[in-house]
Image 1 (cartoon, rainbow, N blue to C red):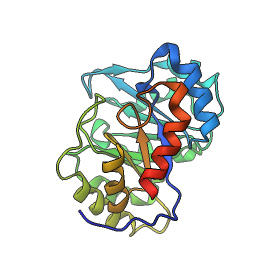
Image 2 (cartoon, one colour):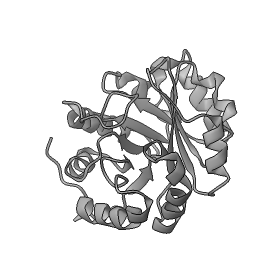
Image 3 (cartoon, rainbow, N blue to C red):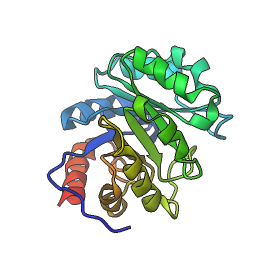
Image 4 (cartoon, rainbow, N blue to C red):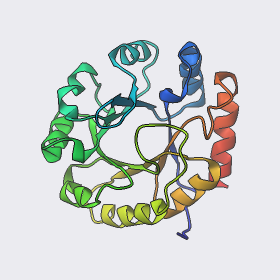
Amino acid sequence: MEGVFNMKKRVAIYPSVMCSKPWELKDYIAEFEKAGVDGIHFDVMDGHFVANITLGTGDYEAIRSLTDLPFNLHFMAEQPEKIMSYFPMRENDMCSFHPEGTRQPYMLLQMLRNQNIKAGLAISPDTSVDYIENCLELLDFILVMAVAPGFGGQKMVPGHLSKLAKIKEIVEKADHKIEIIVDGNTIVEHSIKMLAAGADSLVVGTSSIMKQGPVKFVENYHHYLEEITK
């Protein structure tokens, strides 16, 4: 996929706390605030929709107590509507779920928007883009997975960039701005191509800017931004 990314456009960055060690979390949060990131990406995995289990209500409450940064919650769960209330969201937080995990994705998006929460669909590599077209008027953002959901450290799947470009075409039909966020293997060389294919924002983790720990985060963050936008 070839494209030209508008380097004057600001790229929103959401670091994933799933990629931090528990004993480093407080330091990471302080560094996130210092760097001025756009929000904290928070993965909820239930062991059913995906095999992994991560980040429960205790983790959520603890991180909430440390910062006023917005949260970007990603529910990898069966029937996410049954557990969302255990993660009390604030106005202008972001929340995405996998449409195939619920019987009523349209209704769930409506519910989130009625609570002044930014509503999004998480689209896995094997998820049809038809879900996006059917819910276009309710979407504030789309979380496009460059890897299969469930585990970190995976390689970008073949066909991700072409699917991303297709999603961009669909989003441009909407009468309002819909943010396209890519999650998975957002290393510099991939991120440049993702942005060119239509991404607005990136979820980042250990494969991109968090692998050296919180002490180096701000330095890595600014270096990453410079590399993907130069």
